[in-house]
Length: 192
Image (cartoon, rainbow, N blue to C red):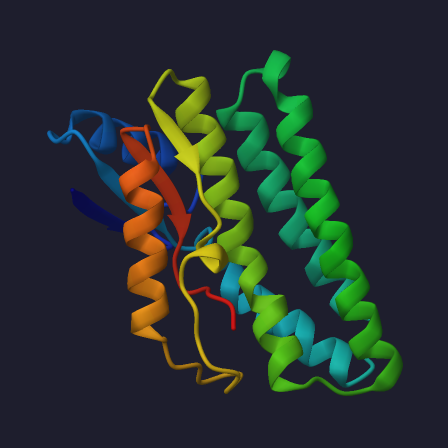
């Protein structure tokens, strides 16, 4: 089993993601774990939306719109039109949840470490889903797996510590049962 990690620059846009697909496709081995970051620059934008919302600055809405547009553009450039509906629907649904969280931060005028962690997680959640769907549509034997189901931490939000006993058990169980050659996961995220 090999683990391939691609940072934000590697998955910054459709062209780079296509190159990642080619690298993954050409990597030898019967089992690959592909860990991806948020699209380049998205994590910073998510942190900015949280900061603006918490300071009750409606400018967070414009930054959220920019985040949405980046993801939709990436989907439109990667996924054939006939297959876009499912991916767009899922991404827009997740973005609606993000918008609700930011609206809550705006209304109460603050952000907790737990909420900040939740908001910033959307970068990896969205990119890993989009990339996995692109791999599948490109005929790679791939599947999406939510990292939060595998990697478990304590409740120290903002500075979570991995519970390696539970995490290792979850990973061993999942990967021993997975039938796919490629598993795509978001990096930087876990759950308590």
